[in-house]
Image 1 (cartoon, rainbow, N blue to C red):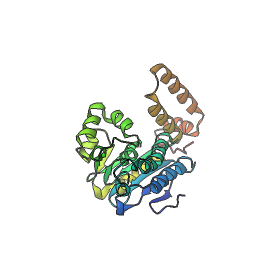
Image 2: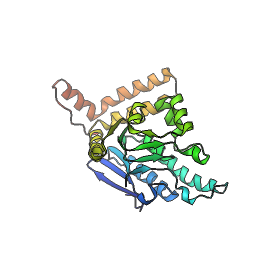
Image 3: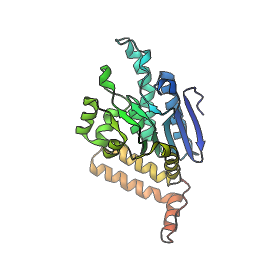
Image 4: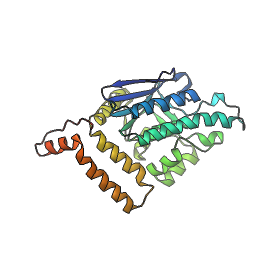
Amino acid sequence: MVQSADVTTDIVGDVGRVVMDRPDRHNAMDPEMAAAIATALHEFATDDGVRTIALTGSGGTFNTGADLSTLDGDERDADAIDAVAGPLHDAVRTMTRAPKPVVTGINGVVAGGGLGLALASDVAVMANDARFEYAYPSIGLSGDGGITWLLPRLVGLRRAQSFALLGEPIDAAEAVDRALVTEAVPADEFDDRFATVAADLASGPTEAFARIRRLFFEGTDRGLGRHLRHERESLTGLTTTRDYATGIGTFFEDEDPSFEGR
């Protein structure tokens, strides 16, 4: 597992947990932390013993993007910013391509590049005292971490433009309304709900989830006819899995299936 002062990992049941743990800097990323996040997500994405990846932050903050305290405010910062953006983009790619569900636990402020990590999941649980901030224009920048791709697809172009350009934070209730997150829960219930959602996903038909994720994320880049062929191939291909046999075997018996994830 990842050995980092700023990122902790563990496996609880079938859930691989990644915790961004730099609370003294509001979980802002330097290059080493960004690389540790990317590595931890990749390790769990390729670990057959992990059936769901869960990403959250510590200290009442999710992730506030790059650590701005290391920047000078001129063109010399290009390399420093890129050193965070590179592994951050690797992390987001892993989250969207992993062959298993990904859940994010948004336990506090999310800003800058942290938005990409928050939004690249299948299910996002948000504490009701957390908030989203786009933040980039306030320092004269545009956006990274996949947020300019994810936001319009989640909330629509007009709402994405409003959020990014007007600079108004989005609270938990509005985040649910805009479909930025799946649900918002009271802060004192957040940890339990986040763990429950992750465990529920880990008990599901993992290979079917993987095919669904792939169809959703790749579908926007191809026409309907080609996508229908991919749907058909995924559907029929899953008939070879144990989980399909289990699901069919219990469906007519009115029983809850016990999926193995294969």
